[in-house]
View 1 (cartoon, helix red, strand yellow):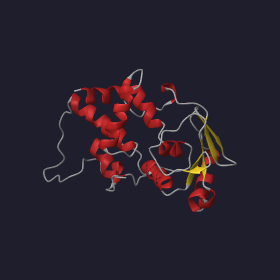
View 2 (cartoon, one colour):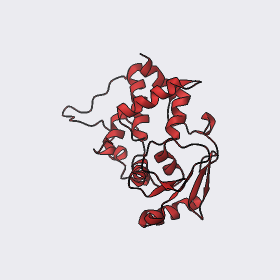
View 3 (spheres, helix red, strand yellow):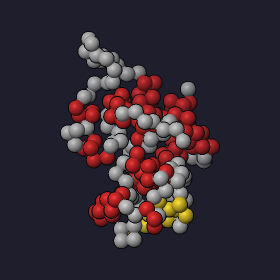
View 4 (cartoon, helix red, strand yellow):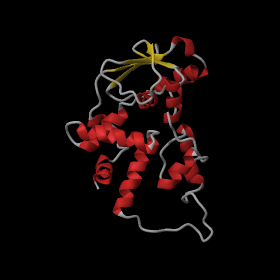
Length: 209
């Protein structure tokens, strides 16, 4: 499965805001955006400052969502097509589909400190879904699904996660047992349950042209 393997701090600098791709590092002085706020590339005559058009703002919002969830353009466009076919508002449906990704849920409940780490844990078979090993990060969780650590993969990542989830709050549509390190999907997420990370209207406007 294709994925971006370049420097992730460069992605944040490209859109001019933090996407929190390195977990706790993004909250420290080591954050790439804090250290170098200019856009990537050569700046022999100093960084250029120009007004961003409406189309540019829509593109920036689409890129922000894509970088945040760790998706390439082709896969993100596929998710948008699914949102278009779903009943209701396309932008809201897209936000729900993105939030239901397995790697996103793993990150939300504290099993991983970033989406990149969550993706790696899933791909390497550290986690199980309903008692069976699952290695597809883009899997759409369903009501009643149970996510847990695979019995044969309880090494350092598991120990780190066990320490992190003790004081971790989880979304209302998920239920986490920090003792057994199991998470169940109580119900599918509603738009009201989601954090204000993705601007669905801007992304819809970008793809509608």
